Length: 382
Image (cartoon, rainbow, N blue to C red; front, side, top):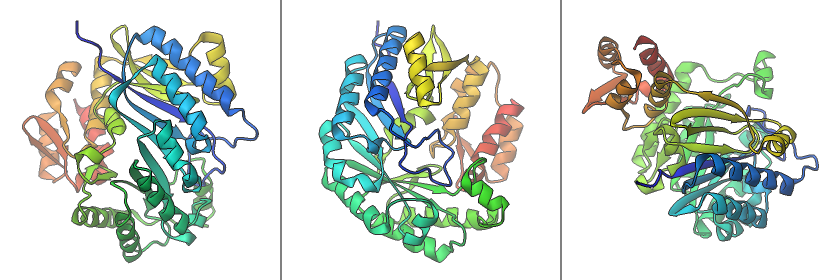
């Protein structure tokens, strides 16, 4: 009998020194929170999952948040070694940590602790934009942090937010080219989204800020693709760019390719096979509730949903079409028990939104602006 496929592991660290006005993630101010107690709860949660899922290797570990770089290298080492004792990392495992530029002095220590890849929350290379985004670092610190990550020998990714209020195409082009000149092999480039319940959503309602209209945002997206392709960092997913296959995020590809991942920490989501059925899991959101759930029942899950084969197929389509190489339809049709609507696919091809070749459905560059809508239409029409 062959060994089960390795897992990916996502660990959510919920604390941030400051809550950014655009963020709708499950985040909290620390306010004296006991970091070591939460680490202990996460490791106990992992052990309980080992008892349910059996012996599995970890192909990737992603420490996200929140701001996991609020933890010291010693705490990260303790967390990673504890996870390794439960789900041993593969020899070539990718271990990513999301980090703020403010914490650059700790980057080398994270590498010593077992981190192989840093995702640095640069967000902008303009001081006025960073202030508007609620960030605590300035552009000089952002550049220095990327340099420090590369100097530590870590694979380096940077996040940037564009389509900001009053941002012109010329200004974004100049900023993006500066970012591409930094020693980072991966860029996650996100259009600013006004999420419900955030400070930015309230500011929009009050007329204090105005995001660009959809046509302008679409033009900025096209400009982003042109500049990145010319710089040797083409998109491999709707918002993610890499200088070659080795620079792509293996952990995020696990999501897009429909692999299993275990979600640990407050509010973490996961997808694992329980008794052979793909199951969606959600942990308790508040750190205190999460720790209490782990103490009471062993695991932090408070919601589980067994996905039907059709639900699984539709979810894999929604995620898979985000990749430039698209998704093979035959395995999904086998799961669903029926074919996707061929007439709809032909119509979408005619509109220049998708292509269909070698059994793979791919969203075109023009279609990437409406990827979710394309996928939803296919799921509903099947």
